[in-house]
Length: 114
Length: 114
Image (cartoon, rainbow over all chains, first blue to last red; front, side, top):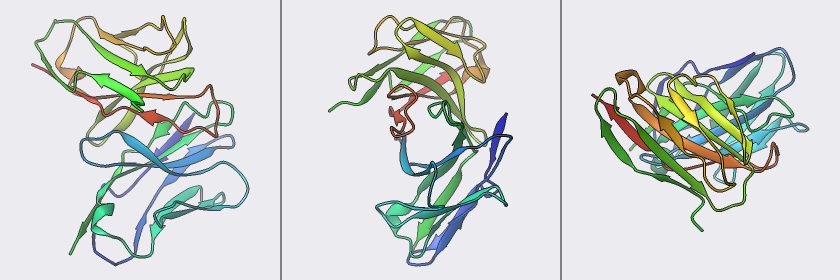
């Protein structure tokens, strides 16, 4: 069985400040890790993913996440946030071979203000 | 380029009523799935299908039925609605268990059961 923990339900931050959204996972086998973003009244969109190889993965809009196997973490970071980054962010895990069957965390609401 | 289309967007039911949530995708994806999203609980997998004629249960299948007669459509049926089924429902699809292909989500159906 696998599980995902997102300890922060809400993270308020000022525009242009850095942010880190925390994600820890539990699994007895190797995993794939994902971050999805949900804007208001929309479905989820893939932000970035770790499958294998380099432990640091990046998105096209400036987010990055680092897979840390020893700490079973996959925290999401951005050095300078924008108002448009306001959304809910979900961390998810799956197992190789069943990559479509995701287990999601409870989500973190990122609120960016001026 | 429609992607994943869910209908209706909103629905109010009385306890005991039945209804079908529709999901259609035009990307020729083999894998389709239904999630429910509840505050503080993230997304939980209800049912999924790896191809036409094949369905299986997810984490929270009770009270829901699915069928997959075509590649494009994956309807979710509530046989006798209960207040506990008040939630936002998301349909998602991807190519068959391909980790290189992310889940594509619809915009959701917000269901209220009174």
